[in-house]
Length: 259
Ligand code: ADP
Ligand code: MG
Image (cartoon, rainbow, N blue to C red; front, side, top):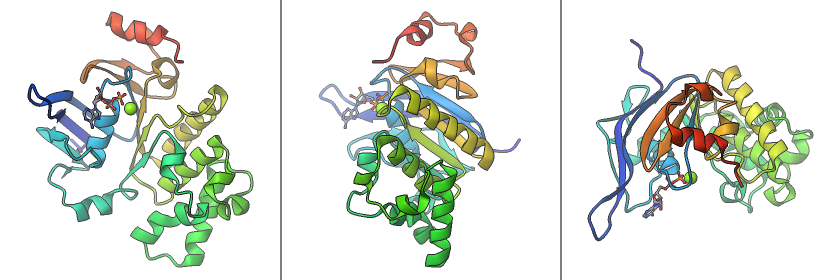
């Protein structure tokens, strides 16, 4: 059988504490293929640490263990820094919650969208610009040339998030990890961005790990949802199908209105 894009087996992340190592991700196993998988759970359930473990971006004091953590069959736990540099923004992309933390205010949008092309390809400046304008158009920005020449401060939250998605997808990663990509946006914009992510994922044949605390909303956009609780997997749900939920916890999470 072919390897899934991403495979995690018995993945744990712990932080040192006075009482010994404290697991915040506690032996979870899952796989992501060319599909949309939602990783959902309450705040503090370990979603972001799971995403960061996959990206090799855990806080320094964190300890990670797994019997297997692999991307296209390549072991991630033993990857040297040079291997990570080759993988990030290339094989695996990451979109974070707040574009303010991800777009550098000191650099124009165009330069930031092109960055992975500069790092990972031999395209000329003109070719990079063309690809960037094309990608800004693909993510639904109305005036790509103007956005390209703008600084991030000139963008609204929704535009900034679209720019982040463009920057992550320009070099066609096989897997995108999006950690609360819409939490900073209003409800209508959230739906627009999630719809965009869904259509790009399908169009590019990518895998998407969509991290969110909002089970009800996110499960409409995912092929399946993995529900986390206290660092463990509570259960897995088929897309948008609460009827398949076995646990009372998942049903309560579904009914909870996000603030
Ligand atoms: P989620 O994304 O589901 O809200 P996180 O994965 O960010 O949750 O965090 C899981 C747990 O790890 C939380 O209880 C949090 O307090 C703890 N945690 C996160 N970062 C650190 C850290 N640097 N040191 C100790 N504990 C941490
Ligand atoms: Mg989080």
